[in-house]
Image (cartoon, rainbow over all chains, first blue to last red; front, side, top):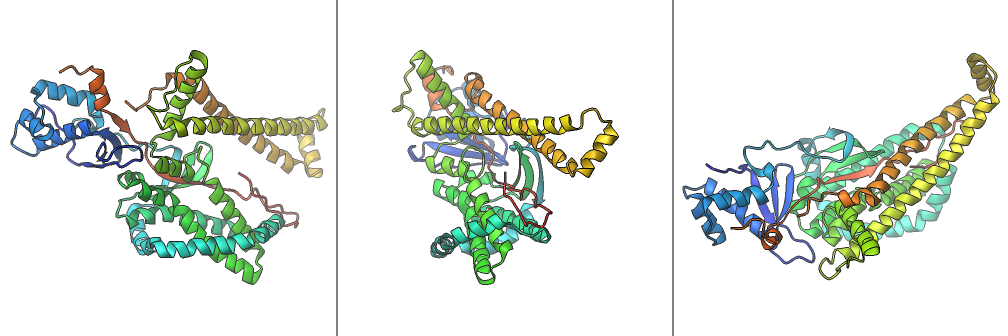
Length: 407
Length: 44
């Protein structure tokens, strides 16, 4: 055979807002996902048909595309436009993930039993009841939750608090997984990883690309939905028992829920915005949108909103993201300056003493632990600041050189 | 068949989709103070 594709390639329509039906298709092969045009899809189909029949390549191509082409032309076309990972002689690359480090805590085979039991929770009437209950109960208790949370919890309650928060993260990820299961979409496992500088829990829902836009949005919101159910239970417990721990838990879970809606990192808010808008690979396209804004400002190149309607969202999103990163970088710089001054002050007070004397002096003054804590914060601020500065540099300076995967 | 033709390039489009990992950042308790004041700050 002159050319051969992997045998487990799956093709399905990729429905996205602003695009005509049957104009885009999803090509999935194991963990690899591509959105292709109808022409690439029929080219792939003709190669699959050729592999699975006794027809020649030319015949298969004609049957599928209704076009005449020589074998050499078809091979050249395939090599130019079909991603190389789909060819049988190319080994599939390992799954790319956004983590510096990651570990799967609960594999798919274990989760599928649990998630199958939870799919009835996505019944639309049940969802409606939960949403009304959440708004009613949490909304009416929010002021009290906020005031009580400000008082904190006793030191002895911290292990319970940590365990409850871990349960909350697990329930959140289970929500995403169960939403996939609800639509009979295969899913991966739940794990823990380091994303940029954040410790995160994650659910691998890469196969969800095969779902419709609305279904993908449900998968995105599944985590928050499950946490809403948890919050209703925690709020009720807090209300009837006046438990300080429950109030703090309710407040902290609320904050994590709001945090995950941040659309500038790849948290739930990012995927929700991407799915609802129908714009894939938002981060990549954000950089190209900024390049177009720069070209408009410096070279008066027209933006052509009519030709690329995604710019209506991409340009404000990109500008807001840049402002967000600059704001956080400024905040971190101020914090770093303050902690730097605190450390300098602490060291100036022990100047002239030997290391042992300084150590003893700080122990006597109860100053050692606060100093170590300040140094730790300073290191964290440096790490975070370097990340944000790199991000801003990528957006504003290196965007011109970006090689997008969008042909 | 001219494979470098712009029309063909517009007709044959391929976009690699990013892997979907739904994440939730861990919000720490900021360290509860041990002085009995029961303080538990929330930071990230």
